[in-house]
Length: 185
Image 1 (spheres, rainbow, N blue to C red):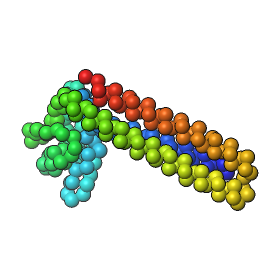
Image 2 (cartoon, rainbow, N blue to C red; image 1 turned 45 degrees about the vertical axis):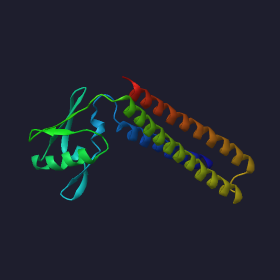
Image 3 (spheres, rainbow, N blue to C red; image 1 turned 90 degrees about the vertical axis):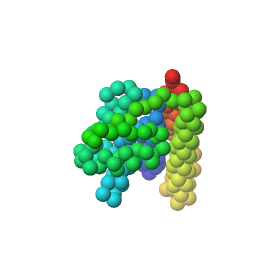
Image 4 (cartoon, one colour; image 1 turned 60 degrees about the vertical axis):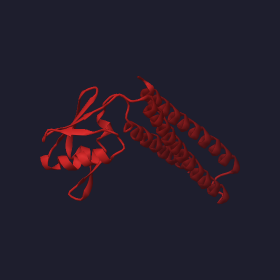
């Protein structure tokens, strides 16, 4: 029973870290990456659709992303989605292909991106702490219903805290790596 609760908490904490990694991969650094735009939501025939389902995304050069829509009629929709996103990029197209030139980041923009990274890291830490709180409440309930002993409860609580500390440390490492990537000139 305790092991199940801790296993569930660990699974949910892993998910929180992987969500953070996905989230941070869409934050722009100085070099081009397909992950910057692949999850971008495009309104296509009235439905929001991820860009990766509408086009082939390639990175032929370190400072260039090319987007080749499967349906040439969707170029306008894709351009609109890129312009209204918070990427700060201006698309150019030749009727068949959209090019996104990634300009070098200014120092001010780098600092803004680092602040965004810190905000997302804090959201992930809060998610992990909420998982700890929920699992602790479950363990207390088990103890109250006499399903586990008081000693088992305290051991499980300590194990849960170790688990929480480990995942918060992972979150910090992921954030630190992204921050270095952004500040790298």
